[in-house]
Length: 372
Image 1 (cartoon, rainbow, N blue to C red):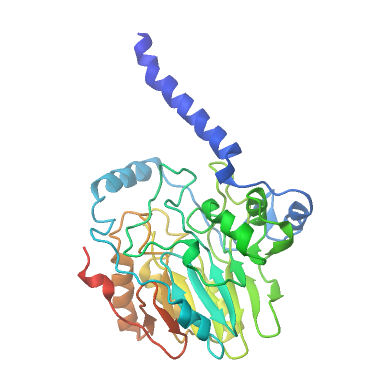
Image 2: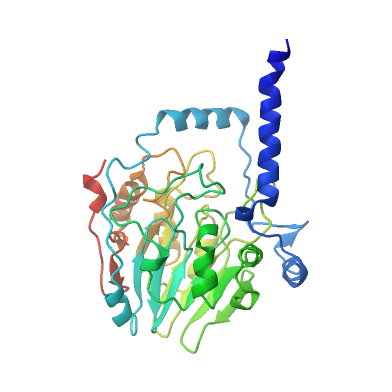
């Protein structure tokens, strides 16, 4: 009879271990306190000790849906991962060094990590270079095989790092030594700095902002923190404890939307009315599912969001690096490409690692078509 209780005991021990890990492990980051917490509490978006979306957003999933998604996850494993290494390019440091002075240039490194250079200043967005987008080193979404796996040593000199939120596929604790040693300025939404400080990054390097707040980086470049429809938090019971955002990057001649994870909402139309037009919008397209439509856009919604913002060009990110949903790994770009053709949207499709100038180069090579 006692053997019947063994699985239950093991399950309870596993749950207890996961709770302790998510509460105390270094990878989980830090807890806001002091002046940081006071600034969070002063935010109009901080209610009852958590941040709230400005559009009603539910993360709840019925039990039968959870069971169904687990079944789909088990049955579609092969399709969700490329069967050959992704043919990316080494980072062209010389082109980055010599460009990005008059018009901005960009180099996408897969998923939501990219380099953008404007007016001679080089920025790194949501740097993730670890093997897994996970709190664990041995479990969780593993990066796809790339022909040239990127490391922090491959990067050019970075003037600042920009974060959008603290999820594992956007904020990587294994990148902390690089941030600590090489980066002197970090721009992030409220609360994210607590993780960075726990990992040894100096508080003097970190600037945190609320939705609607701006920071003048220098005489030529300004960043404005704008809302998305998503959530944040790195633990099982720590959701909504830091802010999530997008960034509007404005130079003397160009305006670029640095989008992040978001469900579709009227915020895109509001941004279009507020800023009139964008030379480029960078929007997520991947990790969507019918069971969480409020926090990730379907490809057709990504296309609509670019129209809402009166974008001159669209670049889709958040795909081609991690298995985060049940769709085929290249379904996001295939569906988005089809919709862009229908809507006459200027969809840019660079090869991963390709350096291009925004407003001059229009990469559209469908490099993914030959891959399984």
